[in-house]
Image (tube, rainbow, N blue to C red):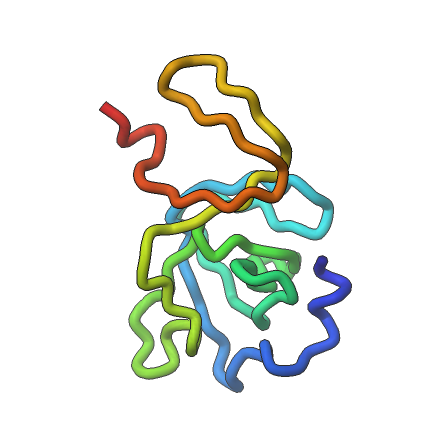
Length: 125
Protein backbone atom coordinates (compact mmCIF):
# COMPACT_ATOMS: atom_id res chain seq x y z
CA UNK A 1 0.00 0.00 0.00
CA UNK A 2 2.77 2.45 0.85
CA UNK A 3 4.51 1.84 -2.46
CA UNK A 4 1.30 2.74 -4.34
CA UNK A 5 0.80 5.94 -2.35
CA UNK A 6 4.32 7.24 -2.85
CA UNK A 7 3.54 8.40 -6.39
CA UNK A 8 1.92 11.62 -5.18
CA UNK A 9 -0.98 13.34 -6.88
CA UNK A 10 -4.27 14.56 -5.47
CA UNK A 11 -3.52 13.21 -1.99
CA UNK A 12 -0.46 15.42 -1.50
CA UNK A 13 -0.24 17.33 1.77
CA UNK A 14 -0.16 21.14 1.73
CA UNK A 15 3.24 22.89 1.78
CA UNK A 16 3.20 23.34 5.56
CA UNK A 17 3.47 20.00 7.38
CA UNK A 18 0.38 18.80 9.17
CA UNK A 19 1.11 17.49 12.64
CA UNK A 20 -1.22 15.14 14.44
CA UNK A 21 -1.18 13.45 17.81
CA UNK A 22 -1.85 9.75 18.39
CA UNK A 23 -5.04 9.26 20.39
CA UNK A 24 -4.67 5.46 20.41
CA UNK A 25 -1.62 3.20 20.44
CA UNK A 26 -1.14 1.37 17.14
CA UNK A 27 0.99 -1.71 16.53
CA UNK A 28 1.88 -2.15 12.87
CA UNK A 29 0.22 -5.16 11.26
CA UNK A 30 2.21 -4.85 8.02
CA UNK A 31 5.80 -3.79 7.26
CA UNK A 32 4.64 -0.55 5.58
CA UNK A 33 2.78 0.68 8.70
CA UNK A 34 4.10 2.69 11.66
CA UNK A 35 3.94 1.58 15.28
CA UNK A 36 3.27 4.45 17.70
CA UNK A 37 2.06 5.19 21.21
CA UNK A 38 -0.72 7.42 22.56
CA UNK A 39 0.43 11.04 22.68
CA UNK A 40 3.17 10.63 20.07
CA UNK A 41 3.33 13.41 17.46
CA UNK A 42 3.31 12.35 13.82
CA UNK A 43 4.03 14.57 10.82
CA UNK A 44 1.66 13.76 7.95
CA UNK A 45 3.59 13.58 4.68
CA UNK A 46 0.56 12.91 2.44
CA UNK A 47 -2.69 11.02 2.21
CA UNK A 48 -2.16 7.37 1.35
CA UNK A 49 -3.60 5.53 -1.63
CA UNK A 50 -6.02 3.62 0.63
CA UNK A 51 -8.84 5.73 2.09
CA UNK A 52 -8.56 6.05 5.86
CA UNK A 53 -4.75 6.10 5.93
CA UNK A 54 -2.04 8.76 5.91
CA UNK A 55 1.66 8.46 5.23
CA UNK A 56 3.28 9.78 8.38
CA UNK A 57 6.73 10.39 9.77
CA UNK A 58 7.81 9.87 13.37
CA UNK A 59 10.32 12.10 15.15
CA UNK A 60 13.09 9.56 14.38
CA UNK A 61 12.43 9.93 10.62
CA UNK A 62 10.72 6.56 10.17
CA UNK A 63 7.88 6.76 7.62
CA UNK A 64 4.88 4.51 7.10
CA UNK A 65 1.12 4.23 7.00
CA UNK A 66 -0.94 5.67 9.86
CA UNK A 67 -4.67 4.85 10.30
CA UNK A 68 -6.68 8.07 10.43
CA UNK A 69 -8.83 6.64 13.25
CA UNK A 70 -5.84 6.66 15.61
CA UNK A 71 -4.79 10.31 15.29
CA UNK A 72 -6.22 13.77 15.92
CA UNK A 73 -5.02 16.95 14.26
CA UNK A 74 -3.97 19.74 16.60
CA UNK A 75 -5.33 23.25 16.10
CA UNK A 76 -3.03 24.93 13.59
CA UNK A 77 -5.20 27.56 11.96
CA UNK A 78 -6.83 26.75 8.65
CA UNK A 79 -4.19 24.13 7.75
CA UNK A 80 -4.52 22.10 10.94
CA UNK A 81 -6.61 19.24 9.64
CA UNK A 82 -6.85 17.20 6.51
CA UNK A 83 -8.80 19.13 3.87
CA UNK A 84 -11.88 17.33 2.62
CA UNK A 85 -11.36 14.37 4.93
CA UNK A 86 -13.97 15.03 7.62
CA UNK A 87 -15.68 12.01 9.15
CA UNK A 88 -19.25 13.22 9.85
CA UNK A 89 -20.49 9.88 11.19
CA UNK A 90 -19.10 7.21 13.47
CA UNK A 91 -15.57 5.94 13.04
CA UNK A 92 -15.25 2.97 10.76
CA UNK A 93 -12.88 0.06 10.52
CA UNK A 94 -12.16 -2.63 7.92
CA UNK A 95 -11.77 -6.24 9.05
CA UNK A 96 -8.30 -7.55 8.27
CA UNK A 97 -9.42 -11.17 8.65
CA UNK A 98 -12.66 -13.13 9.22
CA UNK A 99 -13.83 -13.68 12.79
CA UNK A 100 -16.37 -16.04 14.37
CA UNK A 101 -17.93 -14.69 17.56
CA UNK A 102 -16.91 -16.59 20.68
CA UNK A 103 -19.23 -14.79 23.13
CA UNK A 104 -22.73 -13.28 23.07
CA UNK A 105 -21.36 -9.71 22.97
CA UNK A 106 -19.18 -10.25 19.85
CA UNK A 107 -19.93 -10.05 16.13
CA UNK A 108 -19.14 -12.40 13.25
CA UNK A 109 -17.52 -10.68 10.26
CA UNK A 110 -15.70 -11.43 7.04
CA UNK A 111 -12.35 -10.12 5.78
CA UNK A 112 -12.74 -6.66 4.23
CA UNK A 113 -16.10 -5.96 5.87
CA UNK A 114 -16.60 -2.33 6.98
CA UNK A 115 -17.94 -1.77 10.50
CA UNK A 116 -19.08 1.30 12.40
CA UNK A 117 -17.22 1.64 15.70
CA UNK A 118 -19.70 2.75 18.32
CA UNK A 119 -17.55 2.21 21.44
CA UNK A 120 -14.01 1.07 22.18
CA UNK A 121 -13.76 -2.09 24.26
CA UNK A 122 -12.34 -0.06 27.16
CA UNK A 123 -15.54 2.05 27.13
CA UNK A 124 -17.90 -0.93 27.27
CA UNK A 125 -19.92 -1.31 30.48
